[in-house]
Image (cartoon, rainbow, N blue to C red):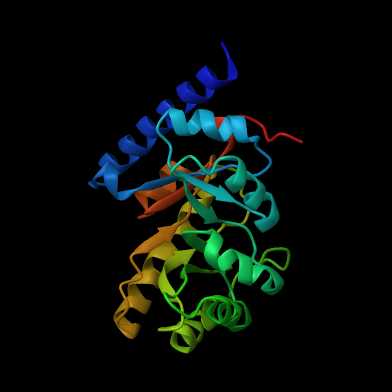
Length: 228
């Protein structure tokens, strides 16, 4: 089977799994956006996934994304930044991505505002629920202050998290439930909709959907192991 056919087959399988998980949680499958994590994947692989129906692709690094955007500019792709954003990349990122998943500090948010004050950059607040020193993300207790400081400057659409690694995918469930509860609580306190929850990857995206994810970031299940 040619690589493009394999990607199409894998993509169809993941779409079916997304739909099944949504139905188990009494939700419409259309309420879940499948973002294909395309870090290190070649443009041909992204084009194959696009031909299979994918429209949302997530990149970890701004410079890598720019090269792919140029190569694939004829395609109507919605690009997401799902990796950590450095402030020195904010000026470029502000106009290169439809949604930035990884705002984790006032410093990053202000850099995006300076780069593009209007229309405001659409973004998610990344929350480090596991308190891991090796991961970026705002501490849970600081998220409300971050939202209050930056509301109106950037378009805060919701929250994102990456759970700590666990012995099995089910270990992620408590973190997904915690992020959903945090989003509901902060929406009530701030008056913002905070309707997006970006959580869940290849190993646990179905659990994330059951716990309320509106965006899942899946790479390996569609593309196979990352290209080096």
